[in-house]
Image (cartoon, rainbow, N blue to C red; front, side, top):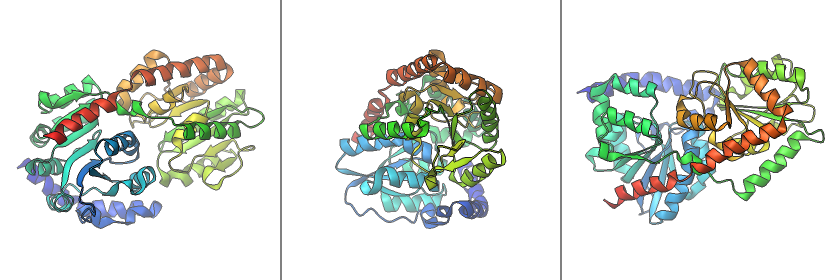
Amino acid sequence: MPRHLYSVFFYLLLPLILLRLLFRGIATPNYRKRWLQRFGFVSAPESSKEIIWLHAVSVGETLAAVPLVKALQIKYPDHRLLVTCMTATGSERITAAFGDSVDHSYAPYDMPGSVARFLSRVQPKILIIMETELWPNTVAACYQRQIPVILANGRLSEKSARGYARVPKLSAPMFAQLSAVAAQHRDDGARFEALGLPPENLYISGNIKFDLELNEHIRLSAEALGQYWRGAGQRPVLLAASTHRGEDEIILQAFGQIRQRIDNVLLVLVPRHPERFNQVADLCLASGYSLARRSSNDPVEQADILLGDTMGELMTFFGACDIAFVGGSLVSNGGHNMIEPAAWSKPILSGLSVFNFAEVSRLLAESGGLSLIEDAAALAETAIELIENPDQAQQTGRQAQFVAEANRGALEKLLAVIDSSLSE
């Protein structure tokens, strides 16, 4: 009964959901495309191979899934992967990362008819969900069709766990129907169990984001980009990555304080969402700074700020900078991936809101590779100290890299969980 009420509520909300798509389509036209896929109207796979369905809700989950997808393609050459998402930016990342080596569509909305239509057309052998994207009707429909559902790289914050706990009659059956959860940390695992996951279906695998590979191509690209940014005067480069609304103002305030001490610093500012690129550009100009835009290949020699208004380059940016601030953390968003700058051996700065990466931030902070700051003044002070003390900055980066290297291996454990489910 609770799931039926949930479904009715979802149907009632549908007009608002479609209006939101239209609204988002004003800034990001791709949101106006392929609506039928969201209702399960997808093309049946052209290949006769069995389908592994992997769902990554948006950009962050897609990037985390890259090593997993490539490993699955090698391990299961007789299967075809279908990678789904919910956002236009996630769709762009899937296409950029995998091309036509995988099938791709939007995932169906969590309504019984849409899910049933999707499953009937795709007929997946297994569903692998990245991190946290759990939907009651989708899980139930797979369970009824004996399609294993695995939550990969699973994480569950205290806040999210409290939300599920408020609707136990809806959430408990869903967790009980999961075939396996490969959780990032034992604390995540304990929360999954408390919500109804059978203990025998829990595996602690670690975070597969530690298993990223920095190949020669990206290393050479980052080195060349860093040299260009620094120029003949060897300008220090501060990267502010994946920033959110309300955070850019704090960063610009800190940047002004940094420039009072070190006037040749280049700030590379990368908003999280493409629809905010122009807004952030206007904010930089209104603050009195000269601006170059990455998308226009503007020269950076005379610019105070470079706006990173492209997609798919952030990993290279981390390799090219001197100090990396990871956004979504000076506002109550829970932070973003700190493992990427750690892998590059960069000193990392972050705000205090890091619940999405609680264990990663703890490891990095305890190692000395991450500085947690609370406001613009602390951000400026820490950045100045690192710029003026390059040996300290280098040591801080090495400590971060040590954490990244020491925690590799989650991908292999996750593949073992998937293999067990596929073999049943």
